[in-house]
Amino acid sequence: MKLTASKIHQALKEQGITHVVGLPDNLSRVFFRGLEEDPDLEVIKVCREGEAFAIAAGLHIGGKKAVVLIQNTGLLEAGDALRGTSWNMRIPQVILLCYRGFKSLKGERERTDSAALFTEPTLDAWHIPYGIIRDDRDLAKLHDAFAKADTTSKPAAAILADTTV
Image (tube, rainbow, N blue to C red):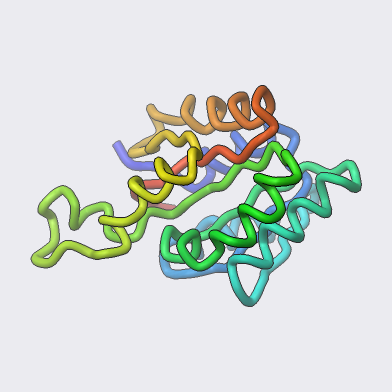
């Protein structure tokens, strides 16, 4: 079984998401395509991943519910923005994190992608709880991320290990 973009889209709507803020990449492009077609969601594309956290924090303060959609490489780029906004301001921010290099960790690629090696240790070091969503059967982990963010008023992540259309 694979992870399907439409199931993620449906789960975001169930959570009352009004905005998706992020930077499209090879892994997330299928998500962005579907989300942009939804008239009930506003998609905001950024130039750098750090901008996504500031914009999502501002939307939260303004009474909206945003999710940040970025790749794990972008998480590493955005660390200070995440710390300075979502973490310090106690924003219950959910990060949808596309897991570049996941298959390389499982031996499905010749060389291990360093982005994959750093992803989970970085989340652990930053005290950001996460669940890895490998296929549609793991979608409860996305709902868990929202619940964790809401109860702690801190960021939580749902890592999207693999996607299809």
